[in-house]
Amino acid sequence: MKAKKKSGAKPGRSSGGGAAVLRRENGIPSRSPKGDGRSRGLSSRRSHNPIIEGSTVKHIAQDDAHAQLAAKRAELKEAEIALTAADASMDTDAVMNLTQRVGVLRQFVGKLETESTATSEREAESRARTWLESHADAVASVSERITVAQTVVRGHIEAAVKAIAEEAALRKSVEAGVTAVEILTARFALPVPAATIAVPPVEDWASRVLPGTDSMRPSRSTRRRMLVTRVASDSPERIRRATLNAVAEFVDKHGKTLPAEVLAILAAAPIPADALDSPREATSGERHFADELARSVADTKRALAAVPAGFRGGV
Image 1 (cartoon, rainbow, N blue to C red):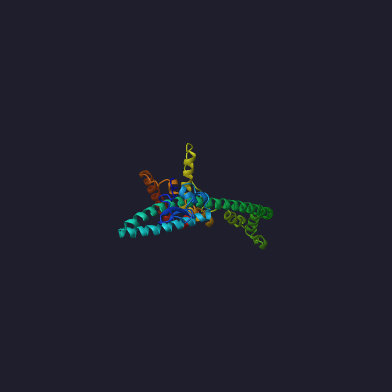
Image 2: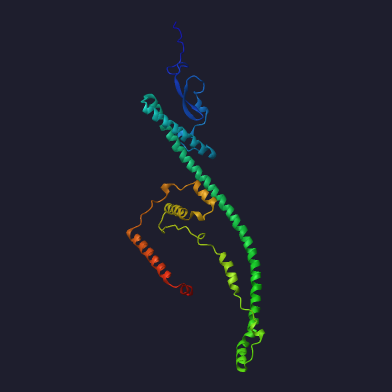
C-alpha cells in the first residue's frame, strides 16, 4: 500500500524563505514578506485602486486630490534624487529598482495632475456660479434702490423745473422794459433807477446738474468689452476656442478692471495652453498700418501743441 504523499507547499508559495509577493498597502502596490496573512485575496477584499487600474479617479475626494498630487510629486522628487545618486555610484540593482519606481511614480503624477486639473476646473466653475448668483442678487437689490432714488430725484427735478420756469417768467416780465429804460434815460438824460440794475444774474442751473448725471455714466475702463472673433460658418468647437482666446486676451490686457474675487476664480483654473491659439505675428501690411497710424497721431499732437491755448479752447 502506497503511503499517502504528504501535501507540501507549492513552489514559490512556502511560508518561509522570505519570498516577496506583491500586495496592496492603502491601495498602493508594494513588496512584503510572504506568509504575513495579508496578501492572499487582498485584491478581492479591498476596493480597486483606480490609479492602478487606469480608470478615472472618481472616488477620491476633491479636497484630497491636490494633497495627494503634492505627496506624489514629493515622492517622485525623492526617488529621482535617489536614482541620480545610485547612477553616480553605479549601483546596478538600485538603479534598476529606482528606475522602475520613478517610472511608476511619473505615471501616478500624470494621472493625478489630470484629476487635479479637472477638480480645479469643477471648483472654479462652482465658485463662478456662486459669484454670478450673488452678483445677480446684488444687481436686483441695487435696481430696487435705484428705482426709489430715481423717484425721489424725479420729484426734485420736477420741482426745480417748475421753480426755474417761474424765475424765467419773472425775468421776462421786466425784460421788455430793458430797452425802454435805455431809450428813456438816453433821451431825457435821466439816471437809471437802482432797482433796474439789481436783478440777479442768470444762473446756469444745468451746469449744476450735468456733473452729477455725467458721474453716473460708466467709465471707459469699466465698459471695456470682450471681443470674440468668429464667422457664421464656425463650428461650436471653434466658437468655444475663439471665446477662450478672447477671455485670455481680455484678462491679459484689462484684468485690473475685474473684481479681485473674479480674478482669483480665473487664476484657480487657468485656461489650458492647448485650448488657445498660438500668438500670430502681425503681417507687414498690418505693421505698416500701425506705423502710419502712430505717425499720424504724433503729427496731430505736434500740430495741436503749436496752436495757441486760447484758440484751442474756442475750437
